[in-house]
Image (cartoon, rainbow, N blue to C red; front, side):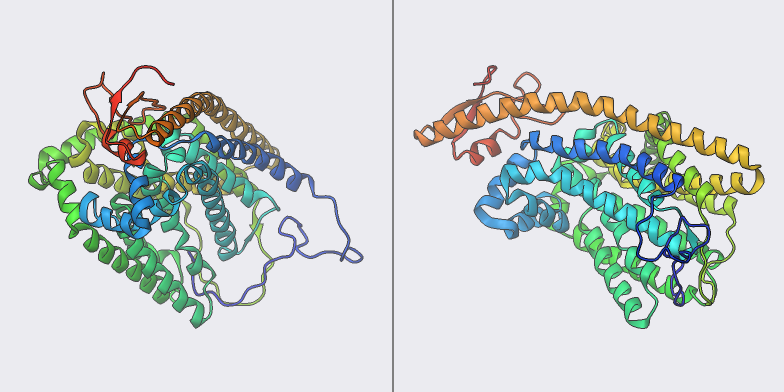
Length: 507
């Protein structure tokens, strides 16, 4: 956020009030302070939950669109998948690349996807918190940045109405879950850039990330443009005149990259075919009826999100952060951040979430129609921003409490926040357990049917029976009582059969 700062020294022990180790303490292992121990203990709760979620990934099996992806990657490689997306499906060549990366390891790629994507979200969130604290010249007890990052990751991945499509369904996750996280990762090089060479590298990264995001997800591109636009409008109030030129150039470079990537996507044959398939070519997203329907849809989405109390765990983590951080003992050097103005900063964050959420709903409404309210995976493009803003709001609230309240009140606020934090983790664990049970059942059925279909193909059969094995609303062949066959043709191609027929009994 505060880019272009001169060199600064980060305290060796952020949680130590002295800022430096005392005499005789060098090279000797010390017991963690009570604050550090408490932070690590609280961080362990969502980390254990995320580890359990990653382990459940072994029960994931291909479904829906993935039936059509796997034969293409098997026969034509990743390049074939990229070409299919660009020419036929939707124009998202970045999406095609990510799909090809996991689909080249058919079932194993699906099983490892949840664990690897969880690690990605956690790593980006952790790095973001650490670097923002450093740029703001704040020191926090060890483990506190991890606590906030773990809360962000757990809530973002597990608090949605359909965790399976958010975390375990790679076909949807690469477009709507991983996409905003990758876009956020482009911020990290800018936060560490000080010298001229590192600033040039940060500009190159944000330009490449912008192009890739434009070809990966239209909704994430909208969110990124809203954030970059807000930075251009408010940047002078956030950073000093010394840092502003680089911040402005960085934001403009990222926006230009997104524009290029979006142009590649929108002019592709695949994108035109997709718009024709859903009738979007004849429907203007700016038509008054569409804008009004999108507003009603987004209002219902906002109601659903705001009434999901587990999101309060991220707010609580932010409060703990705001209560415990202190100014770091830094060396000399010009400041790059202007004095914090909590209310305007909080309003800007909330406004960014509302504007990006509504615009994403406007973009998706021509394709999904009223179903945009139930297509929860498309919310994730702006929910990641929402979760980050919640953590920031909590930090601002904790900062205000620390400055305006007596010590007993701040201790009580920290205790209440810790309880809410722990309760939200428990609240996320229960539905994850039930989802895991459903996934285990489906994995057993899928494996038996997979063996049966492979055996039939090996015998030279051209037709074989197939029983739908859905989980968490994932599409399977012969749904709606057998009236909708898609993706039956892709299943047959995957097993090298001419066709499959509907069956009601799993082998």
